[in-house]
Image (tube, rainbow, N blue to C red):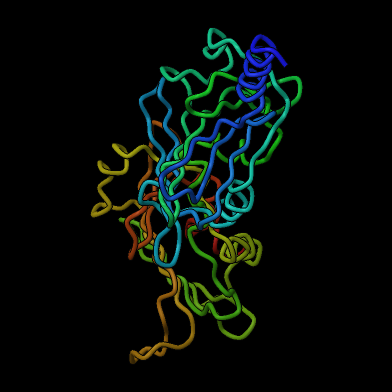
Length: 311
């Protein structure tokens, strides 16, 4: 074998290595990887402790963090079922559906460094492990994805992409309270002009010494197992809300407790009417998070005195 043959063999070997050797991006602990090896692959071995979604174009950050005992989103209560769904999928993402190699296409697919959405994941072993999550392909319902430091764009078919595309409110817990209706014994509704006390006596609800309207009470009681927000005010709206001057207050008492009345406060709600939006802002008496409820729900939770009197 001549030197010329050996030289060509060496060149072919270098080309083969360049084409087929995986390109691996990992931290020094080696506990997670983002690779491009005949496709996109995002693999984590250690438990996830934090997920950050950076919307570069909007200069916005959504911060999901594991706490003790529960996760939060930007410090707010989070819908744990949604987090569990993401955590079940995120540590093992892969795709071989190549879409583009040219970085000139990054902007169009929503995976550019200057305008894309970067996902940074931290684990007990280190991080960040990062990739770019781009636009949704309307034809297939999949999302475009690119590993940080690599130009190749892939189409990712995985529900994790949908989870990571939520805004902050999409992550937040909308359930305000969940009560055992059978335990509820008294409901107090306060408006600036009047306080109304509704008590359960046996199977009947009593108001002003007479049975309360059954249809009105059915509509009220049906909400108590899952009092659920329709949305959330902005941070500025929540900060400006003056709950010291409430439009409506509701206290729900259950049988039990250690005070002399033999009852226990299981839910206290404070409401403010948002005339501009046409709905209501509220919070619990022992909580800091502020929610929105539509007017028809508040009408059911806090009926007017005339609606409690049977016809």
